[in-house]
Image 1 (cartoon, one colour):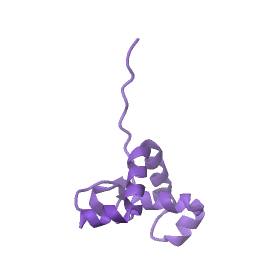
Image 2 (cartoon, helix red, strand yellow; image 1 turned 60 degrees about the vertical axis):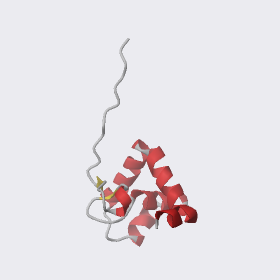
Image 3 (cartoon, helix red, strand yellow; image 1 turned 135 degrees about the vertical axis):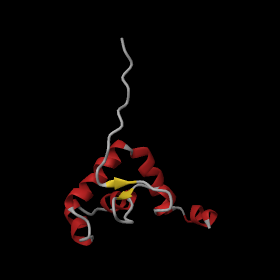
Image 4 (cartoon, one colour; image 1 turned 30 degrees about the vertical axis):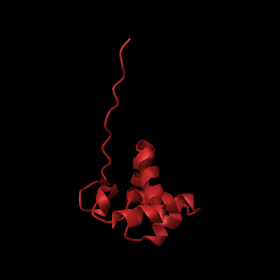
Length: 93
């Protein structure tokens, strides 16, 4: 029996760079973090609402954020928690 290796999946519309949004995952070419799109969805916005509210994003970019989230749930949930926590922000400043 072999051990399955986890393949790294590339998300074409998602980027992570030091110096942009704290190195968190963002929509490529923007400063829109993946966590914020997921947070809006969890607050009750539909995908269509998100696209309408943020016209600078394409439907492909919004769907890519969800794809990234499902592949990196722990990371994105941590980003959501950190961005909700005022104490965390104060420690960062």
